[in-house]
Length: 225
Image (cartoon, rainbow, N blue to C red; front, side, top):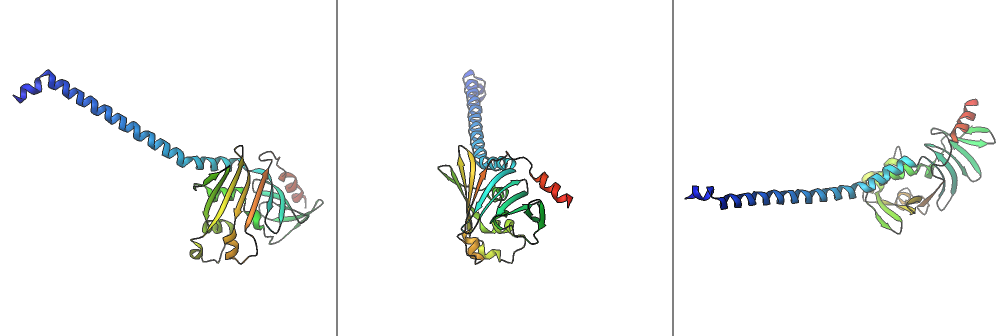
């Protein structure tokens, strides 16, 4: 009897329909999960792509650095900078700092670059792959203080475990999708080091990627000495 049922056209048609439905259902589920994975990866990688693109672009720019004590004007080309502090002009060739007086150079031993070490590249390293909140063109990141110390200080005597629960706040300001300012709240870092500072550092960027390699002239003058 069962043999006859299995050989009947109705049974074969039913079996065929079940197999087709199963294949269709499987295909729909695979498509559904594929779409979910695509969007998840897209969301997770969007901020990473932004940081990679930013790192590749920000190699030439003019800037002002400002906290509650000092304002520094300068321009950077890759890892070299020329900047003015309190009417004194300096050139940093990536290794040493020189005081410029007309066309004369005087090396300044143990010059503390201080806040100038907080470059856009450093900031992007700190915020790379980090989540952020966004409001009116401002992206805000909470960055572990430990990460900042590890990049800012080559050698540190600070017990990093004691500051493991503290953060610094980094904000990136955009206008028409163009980054024009960083704001870094270093309050916890300054408190940790007992420094008298408000903790707020702003970096304004101008003429990004439009500067010529001004460092060639300075390096050439240094080589003549």
